[in-house]
Image (tube, rainbow, N blue to C red; front, side, top):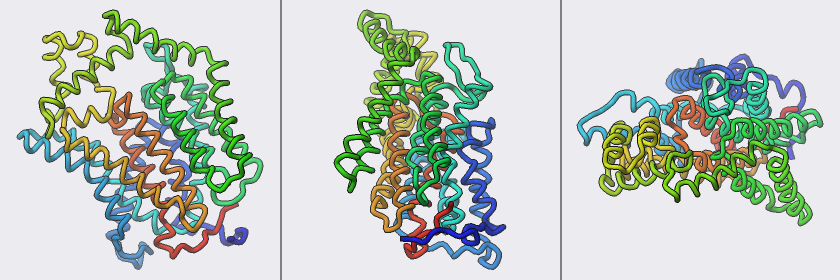
Length: 431
């Protein structure tokens, strides 16, 4: 067991101030400032690349020594960009603006490589970042909400679905960070529990039903990951507490009950020929996507192929005009978005950015130091949540959400594997 941290051991060198501030504030900045998350993530990638390429005498970093984790994460994050280029080159039409989003996955790798060499006192600044991000998500909706034309709230620059999903996952990470680097004081525990509540409330306020699908899955994952080695009483009480929270949300939130009831109403309407409901439009787009995949399985339709095919499907009677108009914006499913435009090549590339980080996190669940093990749990939870989010919305149709996912993967993967570069020495825990 590591000894308690002393004030001197917690000091952060001037060279570490920037990464420490970045780790503490990034989740909150993503929701607080329009373009803030993207700008900060790009700046972090550029600075990290410069540090990796610069001389050790002024960077303080060791030369890159690619181990298995480094290579696998690099390959996975490069796959989306490679898939887009392969499909578009084969179709004879490379569209520059389609390369921006997938390139952001790859841009997060330098940040991972730099953070992985950071010392525990620097990494420990991430301890309250998720709680602060979740609390920020609720504060924005309470102080400066942006009402949408469908009666839901969000921020001024992010739609309710993505906003609610990010708030929800930050709330989950907040509660998972309890006693992360050391046994938290009472005030810190209260703050992290408040982060969970804030994330849940913000998600409820946005009415983002797609994100709610992730709640029982993430809850079950948390129970499983934290239940190993715990007492039987703990294994009973934690699931009961989670169920009680979910039941309370459903019982006391009129909007949640209405949104859930709408699913049944939409399904009945769809069966009776009324297809222009929220669920009905999604079902139409999914059926159309399956047709496209069946006809163009390997490389898809190419850049913006799904969007550009909407009118032809509407003319053929497969889509209502409203569904076709919606489809010009997005497919409402991240997998179908890549499959229709880039085929199986794109689908496999998309899977890589979920599967490879998940494997990395899974293997680090038994890390010899507790903070790295906890970071692995948080990383696995984050990936699973975003994978579920992508089943009902294009998670990566906005550059901001691509940057957020890629940067969070870089941060959590570095936190889970930094000990590999430091000889698995016990970290100094912050107070």
